[in-house]
Length: 209
Picture: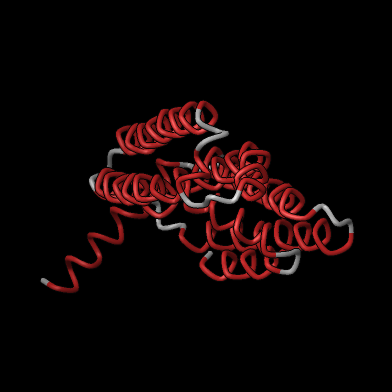
């Protein structure tokens, strides 16, 4: 994920200083809430893993759903705050009216894209707790590097949609990401995953005993 941000920063820089400044402004506006997302995802991982290891898939599923609902509340609050202050937020980071105007116009697309990315991290907590880290990584990497970034580059470099095109491309990629991990999680047999976790725990206990 880290390199995708570096690529997007470079892509924004290809279409001028105003677009690059607006990109940096947008990133700064909502970067703070990612600490909530990361903590929520990690909490879900720990609780889901503990319940599965204890042979309680029902409570593991409950532990997976609560953080997703919590993230939905956080993201809804973010939307309300950012859209209410849409025309003023950018001035926290810049005094340039052109940059602030561009930031305000792209903000809804950016918020949607980041909401999808954040939601996928809600599912990530469940998948990590189930030991399905590779499944999440494959889906996320494919969504970002095979869908989102190529579309962003196409819209920016070929169709001249500038910063708006960049985040439309990433919004599509992040939509694919959250949809793919949601479908995967919906298809998980939690009882089977729990049985596997218990078996691994017993095997490890015997090995250390």
